Length: 193
Image (tube, rainbow, N blue to C red; front, side):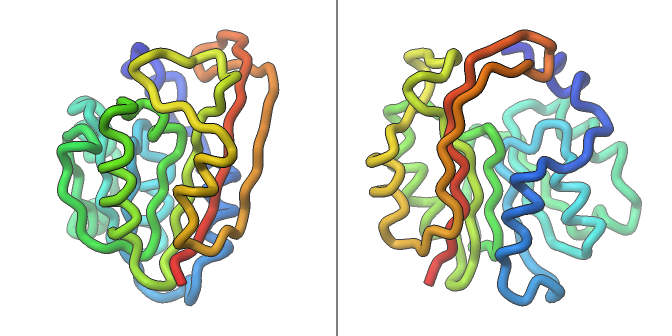
């Protein structure tokens, strides 16, 4: 996938509705919180959190994404922003009140996913929330290098969490690059007891 073209196509977009929905489930949403944005891409969600006073660690494997996001940040936000250029598998994680993985986890190799998921699960603070997209088996983008999930597999992954939203969606819709695609994905929002 051409991530530079993808990020350029999404420039100046608003945060995704799923992201905003996830924030509505947070405990004590007015307190200064810590967040992890996995695969931040164009940075819409990271910018939103920084504008609300959050401390944000944002990981993307594209160095150009970090450079572009940093250049567009308000100067007063930069001290609360920790960008990391890395694959998710190689990154180190602290603990966070909120982890957001918007359309990014499916791009983790199957062989690496379980170990990564174990680390991410541990990185959610008690009473913290995780929100993520997962591709289903009928998703058009379904390559050997990706991790695809079935409903039962996802429910097993979240067995130690309280499921707040578990939604399966299937539709034909345009990608950010204007290509019609068959999408089959899950939106999951869960909190750690």
